[in-house]
Length: 559
Image 1: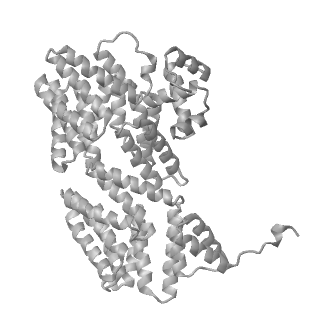
Image 2: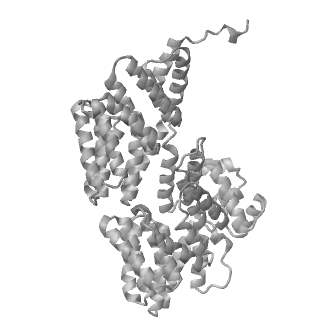
Image 3: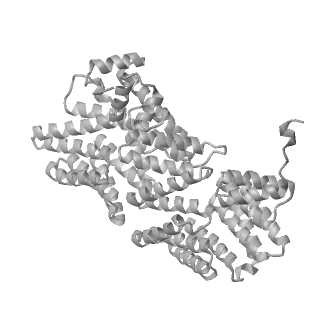
């Protein structure tokens, strides 16, 4: 008999013990496998079915999780505990509502109500019934009523000592306050919610939903400081539990957005690619549209038009409008009329505030290029009203830039300078190098309009160097045209700072793996940098890259 044949097969209790241990250790995949094994041998009881349902959801098995919650509901009924059965039914109704399955959600909600005598029985499950109703009200666009309902949910949770319910109620109340135009009080409540999440005071399957909702609220209010803080916390949370699936892709999209803002484009590109990989499934997550769009934006900024256009189209297939990015791509391609037609349509349509600001800012740029100063002024004025309503530093900088650009288009150069200097200061405070460079180019044009060619040249040169460091090829070419540069710039000026670092290390004979270890980045990122270097410098091999580095004095001081 072989050694393998002599090994004892785990009995159901042993599988169950392993499942409990893995669940307590938050090793979700291991918990799912062990509890599923135990369930195959002998049907799990209600509490263990709840554990298995939780593990299934946290490992991305949403449909299976719903089936397991349904079994847990039946198990509680068989055990004679109608209140617990109603609680599971209400929780499942909420999960299905959030996932967009309205009909199934309504069916489970009706079952929970019936078990609780129409919702009159005072218990924790009644709080989850109220939570479902509050969510429906919020989704229906009535934040005043939903705020009151969420406050009631929180009170029920506090009364019965259910931390999940109390925290979820405060989360809903905070988001309702934001929708009511009170972001200060709303975000204060959400900060309190995040304390509970980061202190491990709520259930694992609730934590991820809280992170995503709070980060979503930060985007809604353009609160970049909080967005960065809580996104970093979400990344740490998912990193501590590698098996967690549903939140990983979405958090990577948010992280890519912040890295892009701070000018860390290679890292942003890597995060966006990872987000697309995570969300591609199976099953494909609906958030993949946002991931494709973010990846398209990075390619557009780098001048990689074909890749950007394909990615905008892929995002559109999953419900993400390709604009304003695609309209800005058309502008960069010189197709001003097409860009103007698209952005006018986008501005004419109602959009949620978090998207509206980007649409309006793009509208100002495109409509000015199209010579429609009056329409650009209208877009800038609406952007100003939006900034006034939220008072976020990001929106203030965007408002000042739009105002300065319009004043420049209206030939009020002196007034434009004041607004543009405010914009430049705002973007610098936000550590946004691309936007700062955009404004410096406009400042250069304002000085030129005032007859100050020397200062104009200084500002345009500074903008060009910033764009070169970022790898923003279309913007570099535009500034070159503004500066009247007819000679081709030095090819190495087209490389980003990181690409120059990689080129220098390639010239020392290092492999991609060795370069990755030296720079603390992934080998895949190094390969992408090498490809970009070859494309930008029109090289075909590492030997040619080494020769180029020698010819242009780009070797490191020591090798």
